[in-house]
Image (cartoon, rainbow, N blue to C red; front, side, top):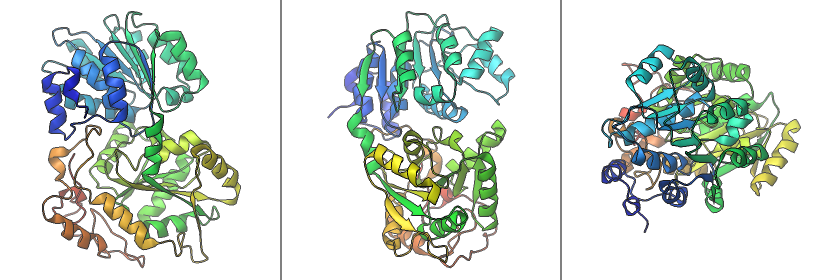
Length: 468
């Protein structure tokens, strides 16, 4: 059995991992970490949800020198959400490395605050291409001492049009560096980037485990009209009763309109898209992580950046137009060994896109049809679906080797001691309050209890959110 300590990693870092319940590496970590510890360049290809973040953070944190104040490692990410997420994970590891400072540099955040932190010295910088270039042009950030460079979600970064910015940043990093490229897919532009800027990289592919992410997700295609989507979605939410769900829309306007309709129907929902200020985006994500929101209506800006424990459902309100987008969307659920459900709404004009997705993943999605009353899942084994969600929500222990998680101390564990039976009873009660208005099977809802939102995380029983 492979363990982290056998690679010679700092005992304090290993103890920190154990404190978060992580004792064994995932396949991508087992394949990548020993290579990265040697200082070799590496191209690591693995699907989302397989533990890639820890695969590059652990070697970096093991090598950083606290006695030097300049930036020694740089991680470039495509989105603000992903930068925030990686920074949170890095800070947990940094607890084992006294004197290590970390800076998250992304747009929408107070630049003066970032400048002050850079002036005080920081060993690890995590940022988006635009804000990193801004600091480099100001002279507030220098990369002359960087010896470790990570390009995370490289395929998405180039898909979003950041090639020129990424190349400009890479050229400012010394050639005597270690370059780590992590990507879920390997399109031609990513291959060209690797060939140009990497030195004989090791090729690490986790092909077998990439399918595990999909195998953990029950995938359903609901055939309906575009006009009937909203009613079908509401019916599915009421019948499946997700713990947390992400709903993907094609445009910002559709996301806002759908979120407004869901709120009017009594659901605890909010929206996430590019028109929101950074402070609002952070506020929404914080509420979702704390389970104060049940539903998050998002555009694809969120597809790569959401890593929240407890997401039991993903709804593709608008079908994604390619296989990669589909995989990244539904990868928000079924993570780290847990199970999830992904529902894709398919209008007649979407049939070709659905067939493309099915060919790409090598499997057929379950078919459901919307009935005349708007029910999107008639005679579909509703009990089985609900049981599957409840099984996911009542897991009491995170699989070993998963990513470091937020809120371990604040959440309270799901599935602890004798709460299993109580949670099962609570999950079956109609009209149950879950941090907001809870819809019952007939479409009614109970009034919010006095005291406002307490958050599902604070409940000792029921489907209380376990801390990570």
